Length: 49
Image (cartoon, rainbow, N blue to C red; front, side, top):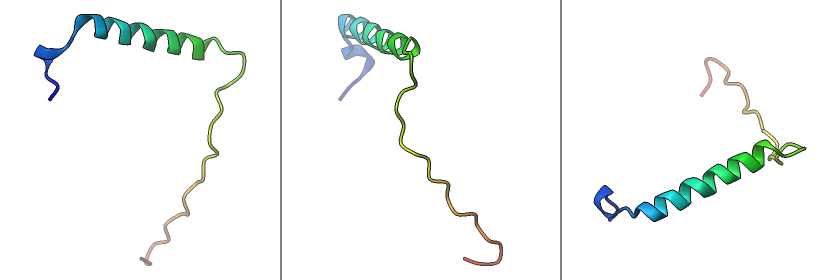
């Protein structure tokens, strides 16, 4: 079970550095990150279920 008392400061620092690095690299890319196409849901028609 994870609790605040068991957190390791070195692990937290490493996680923060990795997260910051990935965010920076994503922001500095020349092209957009690839995405899955968005499938818009069908509009709900009133009176039908």
